[in-house]
Image (cartoon, rainbow, N blue to C red):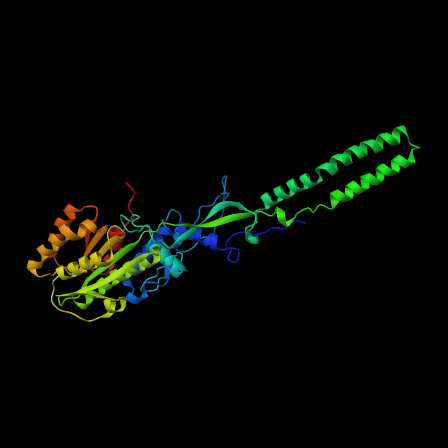
Length: 423
């Protein structure tokens, strides 16, 4: 009788492998559905799963089969509609199972294949191929992350980490060492007994003594245990400190009077997407929320997303506050510093050049990456053009994009945080 032992990691859910293969096969359809879902969902509904529809024609698989061969002659009954040589038009409609506004009397097709992806799968596709640019290892002192690594063999350890091969090798060596003399004498006594029985079959005394000695030797060998606790060997696992990159993300949002409620909602959508991305992909990262109008204030997550405070517009107030926080709490020698700024671009005219100088001279030299999102359907404001000069000085560390409506949020987010190839 033979036994089959299933040691797969997903033993309780055998369909997981097939599901992952299915998701990889229809990756294009799923990513398109995820992108559309980000644009149409509400702010609080971005983390749920999604229903994916795949056209029926895309799930068909080619098959090999025997076709009708040779020449065939058949007789078919006539009808009142068609005569020999008439051309039959192709049925209209059908395909895709989309239906129409009115019923039809012809056409055929195949319904779309619909399935549900989980919240985890939805977020995987949403943040696929995204990463914080220029993330490097800074200061490693005080790290509290460890990873288990193999550190050889030990004679003491956890039973779950027993090394069977090393244990059996040790047991075999012990048995050889303890029974080596007895086994050697046993072979000699066995040969002497065989020779004595051939040469002196009537010498019962010596034959009996040899037989007793052989029996005692075998008992001595059998008393040696096959496996002793002394033989057990264990895989030694040690916790090795793992260098972790410390990073901080500054989120600067304009809440001035020129920002309409619709514009603020777009900014919130962008920041919620960014916040989900950071929380999901990076364990050691801090997020600093700053709201600003004529003055800037550091706030918590709740106030950042839901406060209704408003006022005029002086963008440099947020930049100065961020600079102060960096100097006080986040040394560039120890932290990877990032910033995401969202605004409608409307700023006090004399303040935009100040923002440019602050970024070029003081802020950008300490930054790993700075992204600016202008949320407006109109033409660019003065702040956009000042920031273009900053981008010219820091082409790899500064990026700016425009968002017009909800459908632009996810594509712009991917452009800003697309994973870059190492150079």
